Image (cartoon, rainbow, N blue to C red; front, side, top):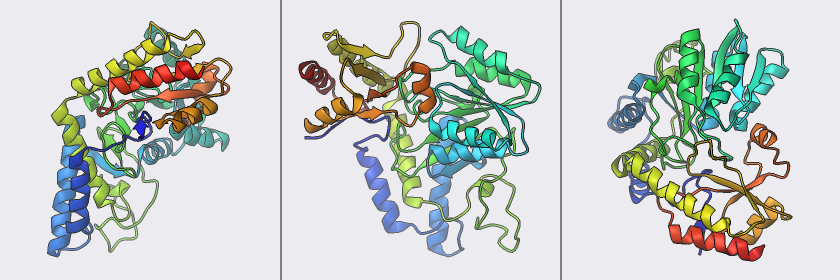
Length: 373
């Protein structure tokens, strides 16, 4: 029996409605915006309905809601687009590589200057860390809403307010927060990048870039958009300008179904369920004096738990648990900056439940970890 506690990577299993939507799309839809025949027209209507659902979920306008391949794709569009032409950018010390790598590459090529803000357990210290790095040429701040390693929630609303006052573009990575906590553009976010396959329960290969329209985003790639086809110049209006090529209709419709599922269950209920499982898991782990849990009493967290066992490498422990059917993520979770900040030179084991996870399974997992040690 397989029990998945690696939902921070991709939620599994998916809701029945998501699977049904994907199958329906496969059987009924073709290409959106590519032709005026009945199949194309019906597909275009379906995609717009998905766009409108995503826009409503995040408090945006449909035309500012862009479908992407994943959160990494969204972040690259936002970072490379906003920072085109140079300037100074600030990222947090807890960023996923999907934000840190494009930023580091631009800095290494001397196209931008880059600063990294230290993240502390106390929100006021983190806020001051960002504030102290702002310069006259600071163009953007990129901040994960919640760490994919520890689950720590960053004070993004306060950071967003600083950006608003300074006319700095605030780009948010919502991969570990969207669908778990209420995230909306009205919280001060200019560009929200997120995954469709995590807390929104869509299929893999789905992502979103949601903008408030304040900061124009030059396209990362150019190509077919289904509009202005007679011109060799990429359209400059959203969403077409950022959606070159045929869209992944099956994934998009699964994402719509996932968003509807999350809305139906309710974000508070999802958070409460997953948080309870994490607390029970932590409580059971603490029976062993050999386990280090990467949580601080002064910080707030989404339902993710990172831990290590004394004398056992994270990959070895995860491999032993995998033999018992438990799926957890070991290593560095694609977040070099975060592990450098934490001082976890050998990575961690990450536990992340979903709405479909059971508390009894989490407690049994913790008991098995204690037995292994």
